[in-house]
Every structure is written in C-alpha cells, then in structure tokens.
Image 1 (cartoon, rainbow, N blue to C red):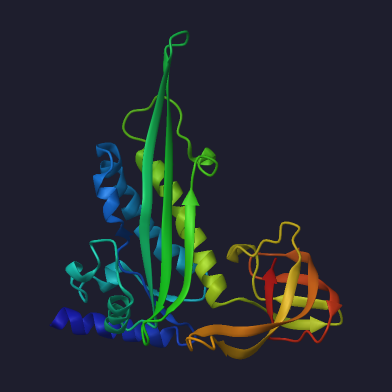
Image 2 (tube, rainbow, N blue to C red):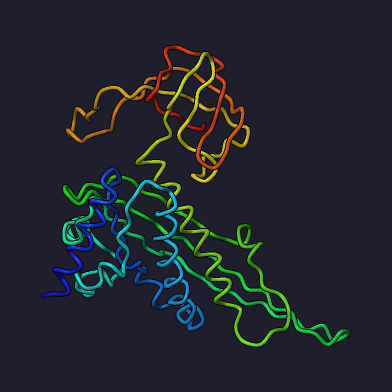
Length: 289
C-alpha cells in the first residue's frame, strides 16, 4: 500500500503545482483486436510503434501547455493492467474510473485501429548497393473522457499513409534495423496530431486582446493553429442546446460575429486584423474555416 500512497501524494503535489491546469491521465494505448490476426510482420512491428506512441503522447500533450499530464508510468502502480482494455475497447465507465483513481480530470483513450508496416527492398547491381524503403500505414482514434461524469468530451482520428510518410523513408545500406527510427518519427507525428485536435476541441482559440481592428489570439503555430490562407471566424458562445426529442446535449450555440485574416504569428500567439466586426470582444472564440 505504501507505493500507492506515495504515488497519490506525488499526483496531489503535481496537481497543486499546476493548479490552473486540468490533469490528464493517459492509460496504455489500446490495439484493435482485429489487428492480432494480421500478418506476422505487422504483429512484430506493432508493439514497437505502440511503445513509441505511448511515450510521444505524454510529451505532445505536455507541450500544449494546457494539461498537467499523468502518463502510463505514473498510473502503473495504481491501475491493474488487466482493466486497461486489452481487448482494445475501453468503455467510458472504466475510463472515468481510471481517471478518478489517478486523480485526473480527464482520461485520454487512444486506440490503434489499423496498422500495416511495409518494407520495400531493391538491389542495384551496377553500384553493388541495396536500398530499403520502410512505410507505415495506420489509423489511431482518440477519445477524451471527463472522469467525473464519464462523458465523451472530445475525439479525433489520425491517419498516416504513404502521402504522409515520405519524410520518414529510410534509405541506404546499414547494419541493424531502421524500424525504430521510422516508428519513433511516425509516433511523434500521430501524437502531435492527436494533441492538437483534442486540445482544439477542449480549448478553442480565443481573443485575448483587441485594439481597434487588431485582435490577439491565444494560440500560435506550436498549437497547430495554422491558417494556410483560410478565413478565421469569430463567435460568441451562446446558450446550451438540447435535442427536443431525446434531451441529449447538443453543445452550446455559437453566434457568428465576424471574420479576420492573420497579420503575423509566432509559436504562442496570433495577431489578426478584423475584416468585419459585429461586436467582437475578449473571450470570444476563433475558428479557422
């Protein structure tokens, strides 16, 4: 029992030191049971990728600056591994229970639903060299649960295919396996995508300052807040909406107030100029559309 109390004290201490940040628990990454029947090559490669993704998730969410992260390592002594959904299907009630045990406000459940690892080889007799090309195709789904209610708060789906792995091809004749390099690179991309999407859902970009037609937004390039020529729209959050037939919450109404284009951006902030303004103020949310 002593290790458990010691870890609880550690978690409580961490929570106090990050009082302004919600705590996020990240249990072990789940793997869809259907993947267990894939080829032997995929089964051998999958654990390497999952291990890399597990490590990358904690770093990616920590870098958002929005969460105090409790990783798998921190939860290990608290939660029985057998309850962590080895079937690849962790239900909301179990996720919420894990969050409560770990002292976290949110629990992130990540499930790898598709995974294929391909290695292409070619021999060039004219120069006496071999060339190896490693490619990964995968899909990872993420769901964020509120541990106090078990409610699904945010979700995302990330796909990596040949068009996204061009930068991770490994070429050349080397000793040993290049797979670890590839899996680490792809895992970092997947983790960053999940962190950006989940954080954007839970903490939408907001106007933090306004002077004339210039507004400052509390997200920058480090948060994946990239416009790529798209228009930014500003909204005020209205009343809670419910389905009249089922009583299910439909979220809050968003009232359109205006549009803006980016003037400049750094890692943490974006400065934009309003193109039209129907009452934009500090605290209003910004979406890239």
